[in-house]
Structures are given as structure tokens and as C-alpha cells.
Length: 271
Image 1 (cartoon, one colour):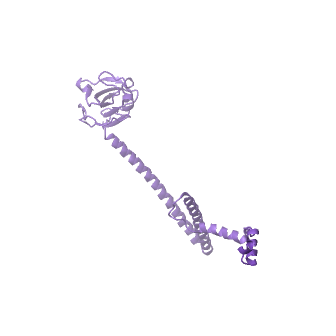
Image 2 (cartoon, helix red, strand yellow; image 1 turned 30 degrees about the vertical axis):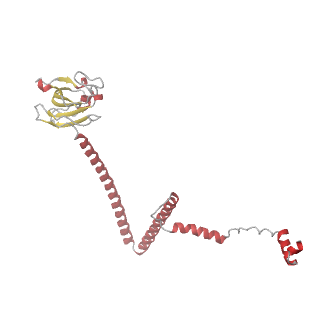
Image 3 (cartoon, rainbow, N blue to C red; image 1 turned 120 degrees about the horizontal axis):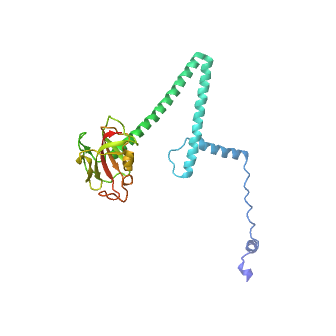
């Protein structure tokens, strides 16, 4: 049976050698050790990364970090080259003519001083702009205060306010006085008009009684104690006083709880 299966002896020998004796495994792959030449090529490749200028488009964090260090290296290289060129140029000028050398030093110093002055001026201008914006914001906030009209010596007219009352004490000189200045320990003789912010109603006015009252500043509400110092006799000042500097959450008489008060105070006398 086996003899009829194999057509020839060579076929039988080939089959037996293939099945009975499998081919040997391939030899292991040997990784060559890095040579000095390959290491130098890797170093050159890394240096080539920083030899190229930084790219403007950054798509991921790794590329962004690489771009940052590349820009840093390039900045140092540019600064170093500028310093070297300046040094050799000055040395050459010094060897040729000391007069031209010192003139060049003078020009460079003048340029540096000019740059410093311009930068200082820009910083000061920036501060002025900031203060100007702040003052504009304060004026904008003050523009939301009630409008007061009327001449000195007459009862003022107050336009009822609208919107949300300010959370802090607001003061505004309607008429500037020229007499004695109010201090914290002063005793005042004043005319005043009181309006409530919530409904714009006049609560009380000394003008209707005829004679201005006299009292020590230390004996009135905190809004007056903080808002009137600095005013002068003959002046008229607007006070917008939040509830925490007036009568608070309890109120007082016709003044409701948590009421913001509007006072127009005319300084008649200070003692």
C-alpha cells in the first residue's frame, strides 16, 4: 500500500525528510550596538530641531512645549550674536579712533536712556488712563443719583430716583461753600431735606419750619458723620445713605425698614 502511494523513492525520501525532520528555527535577530557615528547622527538630528525657527502653528501640548524651547534657544542665539557684533564693532572703533569710540558710546547711551524714558512715560500714561477710566466709572455711578436743583438760600428741588439704590454712602457737592469747614467735632446749623429712595416722597424738610436746627455732628446718624466732614459754610451737599448707616432694619417713624435715605444739606453755620 505504501509502495503504491509513493511514485518513486525520491518522493518518499523527500516526504520523510519534510515531515519527520522539521526545518530548524531561524537564527535570532541581533541588534547592533550603537556606534559613535550613529550617536553623532542622533545628536545632529536633535540639534536640527532647534536649528530651525519656531513654528507659528501649534496643534498639541507636546508641539507647544517644543516650540517654546525652540523660541527660547533662538532668542539666546540672537542676543548672543548681537552682543558679539557690538563688542567687535566697538573694539574695532576703539582701535581706529578713541574719539569716535566715545562718541559711539554716547550715542548708544542716549538711545538706551531714550528707550527707558519712553517706557516710563508709557507706564505713567497707562496709570493716567486707568485713573481716567476709574473716574469715569465713578461719574457713571454718580450719574444715577437724584438730580438736585435750586439756588442757595432756597429750598432745593429733588428729582425722585429710579433703579437700585447704591450699597455704599454717596456724596456730591451741589454748591461749593467758601466758609468754615465741617469737621467731626463740629456743631452744625443746617437746612436739610429728606427723601426716601423707595417711593421718592419727601419725608421731612427744615425749610418748612423756617429756622434751621443746630446740633452736634457726633449726635446724628453715621451717614451724616461720614458724609458731611469737608463741606463748608454756604455749601449744599447731597447725601445718599444706605440703611446700615441710617436707621437699619428697624426704621424710625415714617422711615421704613432698610430704607435708603436721600438728604440735601445746606451748611448754614459751623462752630
